[in-house]
Image (cartoon, rainbow, N blue to C red; front, side, top):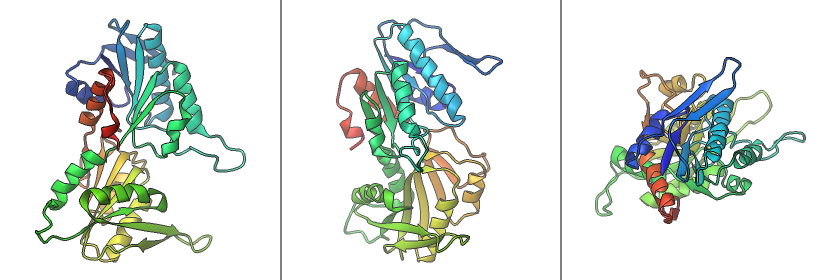
Length: 317
């Protein structure tokens, strides 16, 4: 087994390698003056089972190009198998035509990665499950639920004892499309679910958040796969608190957190926003409401199982 990382998230790659009792393959990944990407592995990988760790996060196009060049370099270095480990799959939100003359960029990116020479994909919480079908190679789509569940239990203080009286927990989806995700969390904790229905009454008017479900007197946990600008998330949290929730937290897999998203979270009614380290920490250190939960053990275990030809299904069911 050989583990290689690009520049997108070296911190996560180092943690994953440590979990696998391995060291990262030394590599020289640079950018020429004209912006072209250059890759050179400084260690023999001939005949090795290679895992290339690179989320395609900001800057998305640079990270994607770097990933494809690394895959090609590994293929030309005679690696026996190449697994692209993509904790965060950029362009996933462009998974269908949104207008008449628009591309399906997620499919294009899948084609590019496959043609580069990847033999399989290891990723986490794809924005849409059908993206797995965009690839013509095996895809393992892990879930952050287990990592989040441990943190939720500790933070909220949920006790696995039906005899102990405690405030209920309700898992809230910020839109109808995420209801299945909220239900899976609720099943883990024997909790309830709620859905935020956002609507714009008419052109030029601000969005109105309608809450479907009962959150009064309960600890609310917003769950989603991506937080980008943070605007919808903060409005949803406000609607939940107005409905009588005791507290509201958000557990969201990928913290894209563009522009002033961290500032919005700091000023919001959210108790905290918890994201994974699938993307390098995007918030300044003075942001007290945002923190990360590491998924390095999850990916490390998946890599170990793939190498040993063991089942990984228990990691994403």
